[in-house]
Image (cartoon, rainbow, N blue to C red; front, side, top):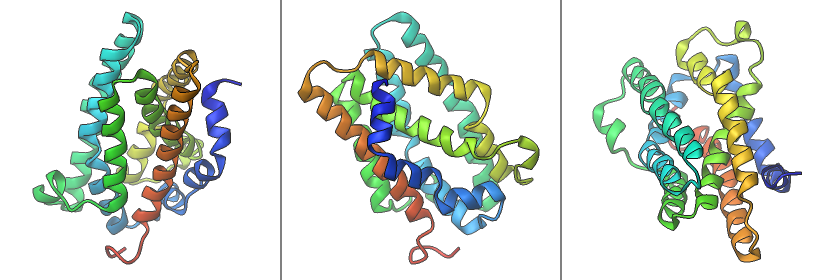
Length: 221
């Protein structure tokens, strides 16, 4: 068993709770309300800066040119396809510019942003990979639940978010990330424990982020 699967199994409770979260259920069946989707996307968009920087740090810290080129390619796709989805949804859902660029951050959003920036500041390739791997792999897992595209929700605001995380290119990227993470498994117990903790915290925050998206006390559904 590789390091990636070892850690996913170790933190399976939070991982499985996120992948099978009621928020995901509602997204997949098309019943997710505009209010909840709007709230989720506004908060999720705030990760784009730190996530883009993480991909850039991966380019800088990767051990070989082939790995750097993979990250560079993903960075270009992230800056175009995913950003286009956000902007299209924001326009459809009537999100003002202030809420796109500088909304009030929920505590879990701030915590996740801090985790990304901590990994970024570390300049440690395994730590950067740990955050990227959780973010991409966990989303790939929940999106895989959608099954046949013919059964996906009709509204692009739902189906396009699924497609962005469930397509051959994305699945190949996640598989490559797992292999890369396994290949740089730290030999030092101290570094291994630190990377494991980074992975654990990222999984915990993914679950908490979905929890916050359905919290009835913050915004109307």
